[in-house]
View 1: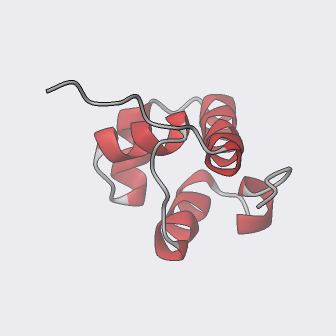
View 2: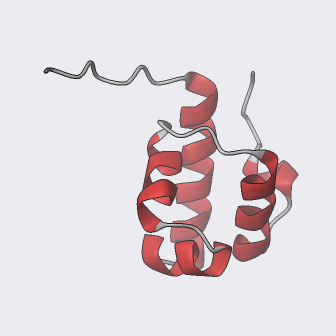
View 3: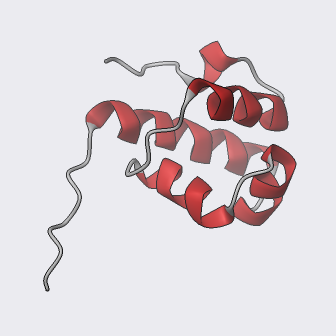
Length: 79
């Protein structure tokens, strides 16, 4: 069975880019950030690629692990 390619939502893509950019600026690997935020690395990868839709609790955990506000993670993200 051929699975269709996931449709990328621009909101999720923008959020994921923010996470990846801030992670890179902090010098964290995906593994390190996933560990700090208590997430599976593959789940974090999906967030960064814009194919996962994290709940507010995960967004807060990511913000804390990155040392930023939720507002900073959501900058430029429009619903």
